[in-house]
Image (cartoon, rainbow, N blue to C red; front, side, top):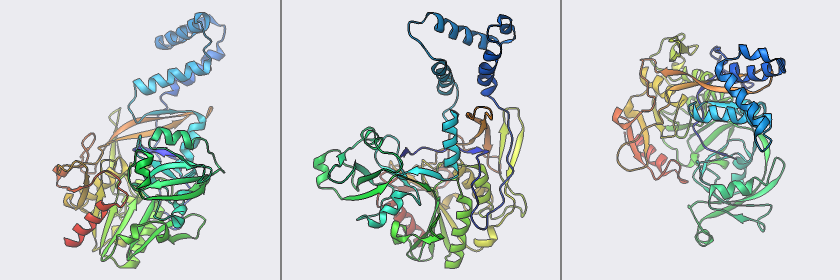
Length: 471
């Protein structure tokens, strides 16, 4: 279980094993280690020079103050503070008070989990929730919750509310807040079986629950490999199911196939991680086989991910880009250095020549998603008028998140710990930066009214498809 958030856009994430027909990844960039130049030295030097007072002559003034502060606590504070707790608090203070919201320190255990999840290797139910709510933001393709849809009264998808859990339906405990849900679900771990109740309406009491539309499923917490692309056309939906024969018809598990008809196909891209680039190519192959004329690239609630996945995807979506090494974006670093990040080739003509491409996005569309949109705009694949933005206020104004900075992860090979730091500002190929601004309706994008960023029946998608059909 996790809360939905805008995933950081960073370079240097570990790569998964490829699916068939993988694009070649862009080269990995190297950077300087930062935080560990302080923290690693503190630990190593403090041990090496233990009992040698003259060593303090070599310490930076700030480091001397920190070690003096720790020494006074050890000697005189009325409670014992362990070394581990002291250094954890020091790190947390830097992380929370000095760095931006995208920079973060990881313990070795936390970083191992980050690495695993960046490759799509998960463990759990496969549910992510909008921040602070019990409303589903995403059901991971290939997860226990995804497969449970087949036996439910209605598909387990974005917009549903999780309102109960228990060892069985008879032992179900109701909850209506994220805090109560988290408390109840924390009782379970990998291998445990749990009964869940999902509710279509937002409810706040047992009385409201009794008149709501509910479905119950029983599933097991288990490891799974997440997929990130869902494609639908001609009343069928497709995704890559690891261990289930690869590219498969998944219409039984989702409702997207029921919404798409005519000359339009929908390609939902949920995150730039794992094998997403290879899955994207499989979806384009299906699009070509289906002979559709219009493709809606659905980036709603896609918070970004790995730069190399972005580069591999972008090479199929940059219509007027150069044939070789087209620039997807460029980054400007602290020292003034500018680095172009490129795709290996321009492969637009392989699948999209003569086709019309549209984009759906919202306020949770961020980072790598916005960078991809920028490349598509700059190279003539789409105009602003081909972009549909979710308008939750009904004022005719809408925007994407507006994240035009990049993070890089640095690991301490000795300890296994790591730090992710904002390392550069990023720009579209034409030099535009959308940081803190986003792509907006003021640019010419089209506002589409919606109650929120994820309603269960996805009436917003229906409205977008109707507008495309009427164009």
